[in-house]
Image (cartoon, rainbow, N blue to C red; front, side):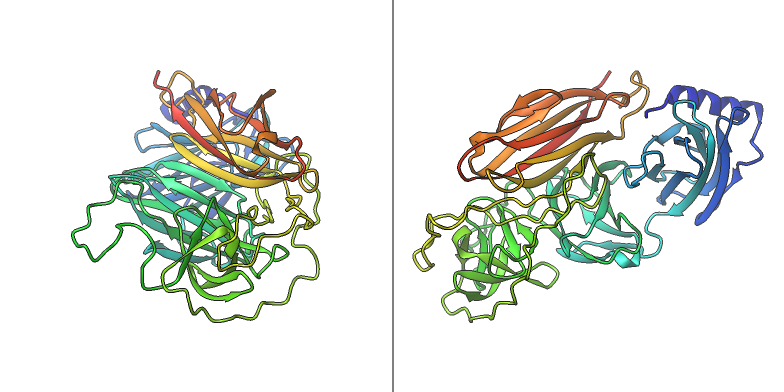
Length: 498
């Protein structure tokens, strides 16, 4: 559903040059919604608004009549195209358009509403100031976002010497939320939709990144904990011998960290409990109690969870941890009962992730499960969508198992930020998707992408443009007696300079 950007711009400039303004267009203010019609007489509708430098504006166009596929273009006060969109990645409708942009000068900006594939019909146009209801809050280690309060913005200080990992965790786990990340220059570098928890590495930069968080469905209850990880640049030399290591958990508290790969944090001591968060490699949570080989940890934001001792390492003074009573076990398995959707969805992925495969137990822990116990299985979940931003990256992870459980996951991929005119800067990009696996039976995992099969550890690469940038990744557990694998897609989109 891409559109002819060059044609739209040419028509828009013609309107500006001859001074013809459609009667249904005109001036629009922040917080206002206006209606219009794309017709044979008015194939492009022109609106203007007063903008100020530094403002983060959000524009949404939704079709109000069947058949219209609206497009949207933002022009600078000098008439230079700044951003454009055909399909809004934050909308469940396949025909809406929208964009967010941080203004770099003060003046009168123009909005052009057109259509893709020569479609016609009516629409609503809404202009808002990004996160105007809550303002921007600096991220000082961790922050808790209440989705019921509307769109919220967090400022993250960039690290010029290396990347800065930012972890997003939703509670409850079925909460559907969207994240839009702008670099210090105001450009969108990441759009993430419909995930339970994920880590986004912010690139090296000076200044503040703007992170916009909102529920995919307005008014949806839920919390999103945002926490900042350690920068990937080498640590500075330690000036005193009293500190044993420059990076790691503090020595004066008991903490847990993953022993081998990411670890699920659950609502109780067992795989029948819901997953609340994921503790990534290099991350640690404070331990406040124990019960039968499980530890009670504090998730950033003040949330309490449980991790299995067989897949974690303890650090610090952990000899006298208090016994903590386990919560009542769920009456039903934690997996959602919905069947996988036959088509990709843009939000609301609900991965109920079982814990990591059992590792050899520590000497002070109970022995590992016997061979008679059932192997872990991946519960069914919905298909999901991955939007890879130009000059940005995104990661997505879930589980498959064989012969029981969820043997196949489907992830549709798309891109954002590509210039629809291939001859202009940003018109083409190199899409790379690294295929990572961990767990039992990784040799039985197949990644089927665009008709070809790949295996764990390989990388899929493709040159894309705005007219050819979509596809799907099918992750298949093809065999094994007790295959249980966590797969991860690490996708990047690098512009190709013409």
